[in-house]
Structure formats: C-alpha cells, structure tokens
Image (cartoon, rainbow, N blue to C red; front, side, top):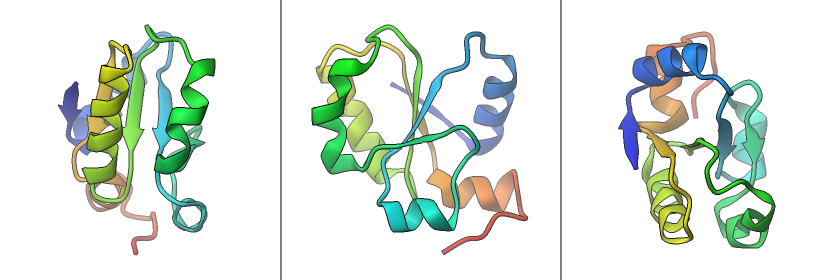
Length: 106
C-alpha cells in the first residue's frame, strides 16, 4: 500500500490514466458533509460484501476522515488480493485543509 499526502494524491489524480477508483469508506452522514468528486461511497463495514464486483488490478484510492479507517480497509483489500492500493494520509480532513480549503470540515 502506498500512502500519499493530499498534495501528492492531487498530482497523482491529474496524471493517472485510467483514473483510479476513489473509495470513500466513511459513513453516509460524513459523505453528505464533504467528499472528493467522483468518489464512491462504500462504508467500511460494507466493503467485504462489495469487493466481488471490483477489478483486483485496478488502482484504488481509499479515503476516510483522518486516514485510519482507510488504512485498515487498504490492508484488508491487500489481503483480499488487490494489488494497487493508495491510502490518503490525513484523510478528507487533510485534503480540505491542504488542497481545497473551500471544503467544509467536521
């Protein structure tokens, strides 16, 4: 698993082809407050039931509030055979503070 800072991830998302799956593992109420564009919400507890539909070779960026849940999900995904996992260090909170300061924080 790679761990990217918000600025590193911002640069990566601009260059990545094809674009990665941006997986937000927070709860729906958190996602409604703030989320990255084009991200897909799958709360942490629902990931095991959902991964059967995903390409194990696709790059997946895992996002949560502060980077802890996303790190745990990233480890689980690696153990499940996914090979290209990126964790957003500091989560959406760090993204809002460092990349898009117009985003709400909570």
